[in-house]
Image (cartoon, rainbow, N blue to C red; front, side, top):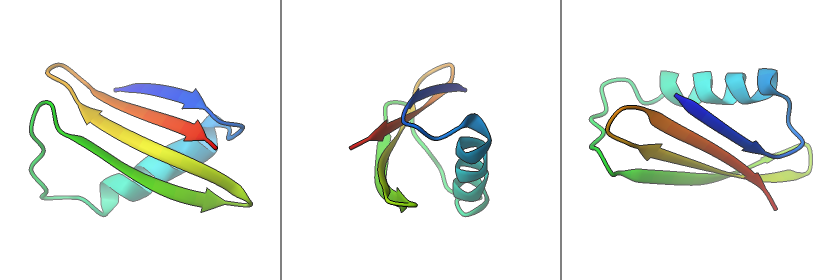
Amino acid sequence: MKIINNTSLNYSTIGSIIDNILSNTKGTTHYVGQVEWTILEINGHKITITIRYLKSYVEWRFDEK
């Protein structure tokens, strides 16, 4: 797993977000090359989360707008 954090959120908060997403996607099949994204608003912060399923790892990217 690779995490790219371009936000003002700390890694504890990011870890909680990842745990929440993973707990809600159990049983879902993901394919190599698939990209998912969502926009989340936390305490006035508008965060775009991009999840890329690569061949050897999953990349989580957090960007703040």
